[in-house]
Image (cartoon, rainbow, N blue to C red; front, side, top):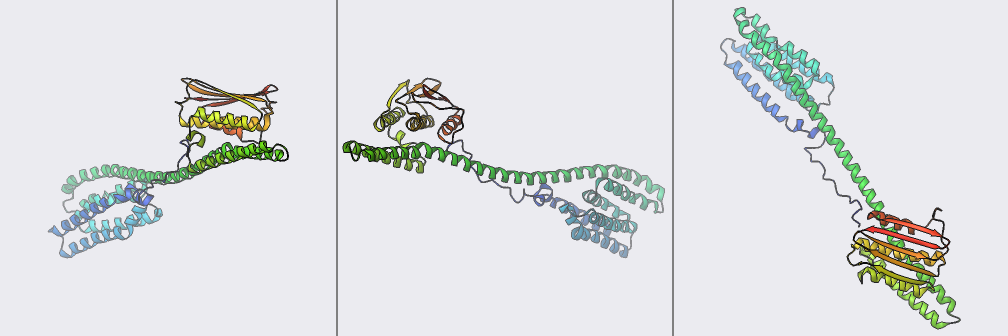
Length: 408
């Protein structure tokens, strides 16, 4: 396959950890929140059980309320937070349950207000930012309310009020940071899904482009080799048939040429199937291959063909040699079939910057502005363009000149 044909490579694909919302960074690292909340739950229960003032019954109730908060998160809240696809109402129900249990726990044991360090992040992970700020400001007043209920309210307020002010300021900042992380995670998940879709589309388009380019290449190869060979075969067989009742030696000569052409065509077919260079180049240089084309034309037709080379063609790249040989074959086929020429000259000029092939005949010419159903000139121009070259055609009453220029 030519180097310019896009090759369809299998997409690398995204791992399960990279794919979709369920595999973004938020979900992969959410277990850290579970660890944080688990540690907070254990610490709060230990604190509640370690105090001296509440009665054993009160300690049991506070422990039960904290356990219910943890269970409510595990059973109902975690899925709401992780999926981020549930309805806003589900998130509000979860937070309402957590806040209600927290208020009850703080009313029994003020030290339960330390649960705010766990509840506030959950609020921001669940609700919209405006709602979350309002809820956190409200629940951060719980320690202040519990202090007012104490017997020595003035002394307690002196200690609690600064802490309440600090948490009231800190909680919105923490919440905004959490919201930013969640938003970025969602955006990255959407980008990953879009990347997967784009990668699949690029793979499909690359495959289609590769198939189209390979079809065009095969069409040009078949036209430049097999089709031209079959044209020669038809011409030689017809010439032999016309000589059967007259000059049998001439008929045999035409048949021998037809047999040689058929063998060469078979070699071209095998080379085409194998994806190799033209068989004419496989047995010699470009100069020799062009001379054989000229000799065949002189043997098969009365057209006088000449060939000369200026410069050294041995150092040309293989792709350039193939292009120039195909151009010669196509130009001589057009001379044979359409020109009605009596003479044709071929000149290959090679210098340090370019290789120029010029094929000129003295035929009747044709109108180059008229659309043509043939593939020859189109294929020649396409081949030249692929390697950065150009094709020019000049035709008139005095003949036709085809010139192909290819950079070295």
